Amino acid sequence: MNTKTLKNIHKTAAILAFVLITSFLTSTIIADLLATPQQIVHVKSTILMFIPGLIFAMMVTGISAKKLYPGAIKGVFKIKQTRMKVAAINGVIILLPAAIILARWSALGQFDGLYWTIQILEIIAGMTNLTMIGLNIRDGIRLGHKAKKRTTR
Image (cartoon, rainbow, N blue to C red):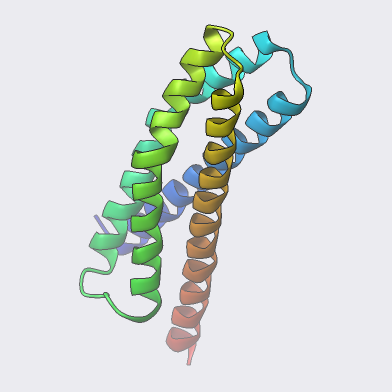
């Protein structure tokens, strides 16, 4: 696969992950503030249904980055890599279990204090991941601009 195609795959996967996380957070917050319990159940089950797509997008982003920049483990590349590791750990330890638990509990009508505590934790963790991925996208754009300047000189 040529570098241009791989870069396009990397960009697309990163943007898809960002959009999915944004939609998960937005729909969750709107549902929590304005929706009926039945609508919250629908939002939670829909999010759960799309999590495999998010996991796939995150994996493609990481794999394509390793193929594009195999020896780049310093500077901005190291920072981006560290952010993605934090986001992955956050996803596995907090976000995925929270999504499963909240979907199940909402389906049972269990909107108690523990539900809302986990919901708040999930929102904080989701915002953290959204920030990490957003910063990585920003840094990727900056790296792309620097590379273009070097090639046009």
